[in-house]
Image (cartoon, rainbow, N blue to C red):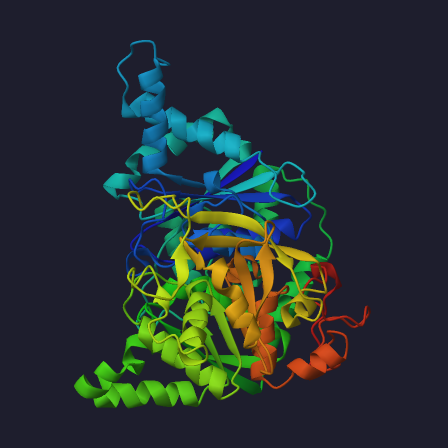
Length: 560
């Protein structure tokens, strides 16, 4: 096993996650099996109870793990499936050590940071590095480890010490460290490559060879970062430094990656999506949602514009208090090609979300509701079509006479962390003519990741279906409503799960792909052609298929 530790200096948020993902990508392109571990020095057990404004989105894994958003980058770049133990926190380490102490595993010894905490960190990394993350089930050969925060933080000290010891335990030829730092330049942004003299100065004062100083300047797309590293000889360095079993031959995967990155700079047509949410002041709150939209827009050769709308700004109270903000929000919504209402929690802004959903439904505008977005679509339909004026979710109005969304029986409201319906679950399609089923490739079922405490009330579903809102996807038992579609609408879809978590740059998520197709006016022709794009948009020049599930090695991006 080869270990590559990525640390950061000067400031937090410097880009360690993208560097770690990019290093993994270029090594995987060499034919190696690569896994990734993210270490977060905070004391929380996981990211499940974080506010999106505090730490960005909570990313959900197949096994229900609620983890740091960087694991989403690893999965998207490397096209792998991680589990919750790939995200290590101070809380998890201390919890495991304390549990051992309570069981008497330390035989009466004084339990200390060194050696017990540091040993536990090393054991965790060595064990988790060997868990297969690819579909072929092969044990990884390389483990990329990202240490969150900044070297020098008091929270990081046990981890720094653990890896200081670790390098000797696994031997020099099996361990190396990438340190990501900031080089301020006298200009408005650090956008330009470093001069040779600057690299030589860094080399001299950091006690490394000049070839080990890699410049990662600003690029138009994060998908160009692996190519930037490749161009500066990173693969050659790792092959020598870690004795990697890599043949120096053209790498097809990286070629396709370059074609994709170049293509993103040449898009001429635009498509705009209104993202109506609660956390729109911080884009990281919706990282996976934005990535899923970008993947789908790229697949249809369109440049994406996301119009962020705080849902509360659409409400009548804003018209009274701040009329300019109200009218600006509605102008954004009305000028968009499609509407997306993502997941979220809490009552604030829910009325505004339902107003946006109502507008999309009545105006025949493409709409996708995810998790809470689907639940609110059901509430809006109940109020305005079924005429149940007080219809609501019991999350927001426990006294509603028409509780169309209810809490799940197994949910424990007395404890917040880890009590939701989490992780990969199966959804069975109940309709052979479902648009979403066709977008998935006319499959009988799909497996997608969930994160919710409330669900559509199954006892009321027949009222909706009589009026044209169809529950075309349900869970295995037929008790949970997973997918809704509206009759006689260009694209009105809601999903209880979070499809954005499994979207990949060259394998876009079907619900998002459908939204972008409809927003660009291409959905009906796509379906009519058997789910194939026109030649200028297609991903593949050999199979004739442009399905998002085409294998990455078969993809070729045409020039416009």
